[in-house]
Amino acid sequence: MAGERYDLWIRGATVYDGSGGEPFEADVALRGDRVAAVGERPVRAGAELDARGLALAPGFIDVHSHDDFAVILEPEMDFKVMQGVTTDVVGNCGFGAAPFGPGVMMAQAFHPGASFEPWEGYAGYFEALERAAPSLNVAVLVGHGSVRAGCVADQKRGPDARELARMRDAVREGLEAGAVGYSTGLIYEPGRNASSQELIELARELAAAGGLYATHMRDEGRGLVDSVLETLRIGASVEVPVQISHHKASGRDAWGLVSESIKRIDAARAGGADVTADQYPYTAGSTMLAAVLQNAFEDREGGGLGRMRGSDVVVSSAPGHPDYEGRSLSDLARRFGLDAEGAGRRVLEQAPAAIAVIHSMCEEDVQTVLAHPATMIGSDGIPSPGKPHPRLYGTFPRVLGRYARDQGVLSLADAVRRMTGLAADKFRLAGRGYIREGAFADLVLFDPGAVTDTATFDDPRRYPAGLPHVFVNGNAVVRDGAHTGARPGRPLRRS
Ligand code: ZN
Ligand code: CU
Image 1 (cartoon, rainbow, N blue to C red):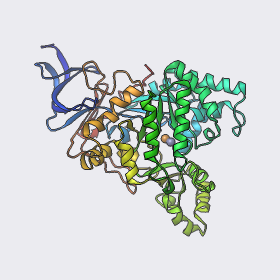
Image 2: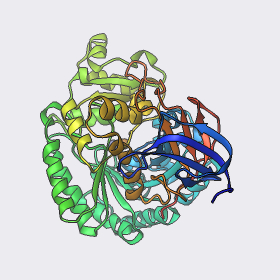
Image 3: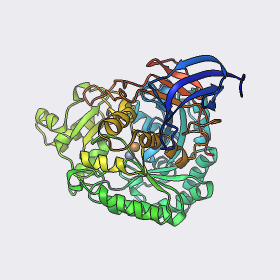
Image 4: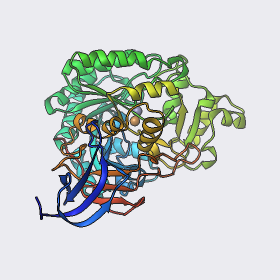
């Protein structure tokens, strides 16, 4: 290789290669969209980047995003690439980009007033991604809820035989277009109306295509363990890989249950099942206010989100009513002279697309889940206006800084693995997730002593610190801590 020309020569970094193994010092050369050499060799390169003192890792893979429409509307995707994310997996929690009609309903919830050129099925969505040319790569899950909304006439019942056949066709179309799997959102309309049997019937398409089943389970409150068992049953009955979305115990009454859910996951893994999970590193979640009221207040036992108090629920986005943003339902209840649930209804009447942050978890559970070797990192960030949950801007640096470096919940090499190699293997993203010769040059350089999230609940739109350079397909999208404007991302079709 001596004498061969490279485009960029990254010198002296400590390489965390995505495998979880010990980091090592090496020079890494890029040519075109690939890593062309790892090691110390005498080569000539077009440019040099002195990376002494920095860690070099594969680009982070956000396995749980809701950026289906953001990648088209805001293709620079600053909130993700500034935290080192080079690949987003969209289509989570049952919300997918096709069929177009139901997909755009979700877009309206997160991006009020936005409009799109219609697309046909997932094949059309992939074309829209090509046209959008975002700064990062995008892998796609088919959303069960969107498919159901497009195929079933009466959402309160199960599909009849014809409707089920249409749903299967829609899932198959997505997988053939290149989706990596399909997702469910079993606390949301209309996914919550689906029986296990319906989900199994659809998962047969996954088995045929080699896709995975990702699920926002029916109950993350006191019914967490039952929900995990349902998920494992669905996976086992059609032998498909399973991804438990945002693994957590939600609501005070459920705290501690993650130890039980982990036991079930470990038992299934020991029996040979391919079961993994993802997590965002915060004790608060976030979702549509309508779903919070339905799950945490209407159902007095505490439904899929566990039982919430008014002070636990903070309005984060209320289009047209910024004065509600940052206020809890108990605050608003006093202001309106209503109870917390009534205050939530009042907000929804005025801002049907309102989104809330819910302070629903305990720190110990967050750490228990993060310490588990089968947990990968997924932001679950909601790219909404207002004051979005800070996970949208801070997830990955927070795991590296707060949880790996400062608290030692996991090693830095393991933290990198959970964001890269583990995710690429599970989601079958060929050539991604590892630093090795021939891999795609999706890369992050960060300062292990300084990397940190800075986004807070009060001030969420803040970029992290200590993460100066990010490359996507060999192109710098972040240089010296600033977005370059480059948009070299690609849609990643299942391999
Ligand atoms: Zn979810
Ligand atoms: Cu989600």
